[in-house]
Image 1 (tube, rainbow, N blue to C red):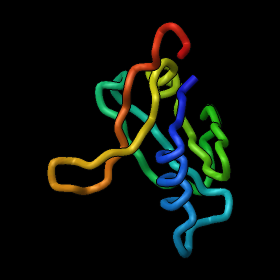
Image 2 (image 1 turned 90 degrees about the horizontal axis):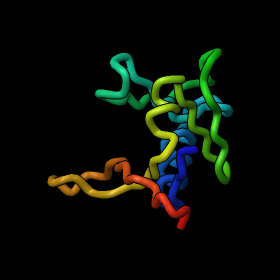
Image 3 (image 1 turned 180 degrees about the horizontal axis):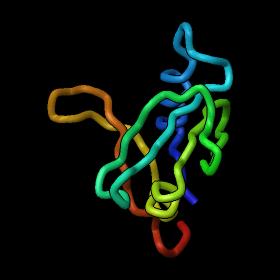
Length: 97
């Protein structure tokens, strides 16, 4: 299952609690090309087949293909080359640590 770092949890919570965002909103991660690219969007709720992750007040919705791809990953945050905040993925440690 996708692991989410505390920094990523806070970022998702911040994004999905902006003024005008529905109370049950979450960050939806989806793919239309077998996880060659991932799309992120604020969504009012999960789609019918989405996997829903709840972590300390943040909600993440994963479509089936994205959930399968992200199953052994860690979602974190970082800075891009322009100093802008971004989400980053890392591989989980195979030993479970």
